[in-house]
Image (cartoon, rainbow, N blue to C red; front, side):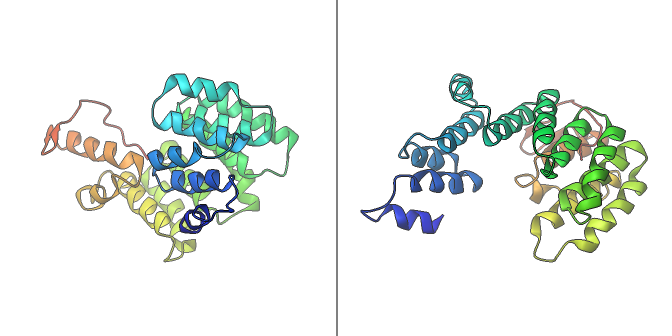
Length: 241
């Protein structure tokens, strides 16, 4: 990000640099700044995809549909569309796109993880496992895939089976892979039925989306219906991994 910012200060800076800066800002979660930078870039497929995702972040349905109409039948645009479908819980629509892309590009193995994740979200845990096994055969140390496998085991069997699978992830995760450690800590709480929830979950609320809901579920299971921040809803009491 800093490198792109320094480039934009130069008089001979290429206009396309603004969209590269905008992408970096987006992945840092600086969405307003990302939109401002993207607006200074010339129109391009990358700019449209970025603004498409920003419209989703801002819950701007009209602009979302406007940018949607600009998408073309090319791999990058279709992957972007599938991502939005997934985030809007349109899992079957995302699966359809991923499967079509896999037919056209059989070496895009990572798409199998996305398909498996969609099936997981649709509660087809056994199907998710089958798709995931193909990917893990080629990439046996994938953090995301191993975590998803553990989550499938939690749904198909029990917490102990899931924890046993998670051990493989613990063994291969380097000490510098912070997100993997946070993911492991979060899911161990879930797999152990809430053990250690008050110590582990609060610091992860802004890191892992499910952490906030699982903290609420913990309070509900303990019969505590009020937090200091206000009243908690009476939603699901099932753990979200």
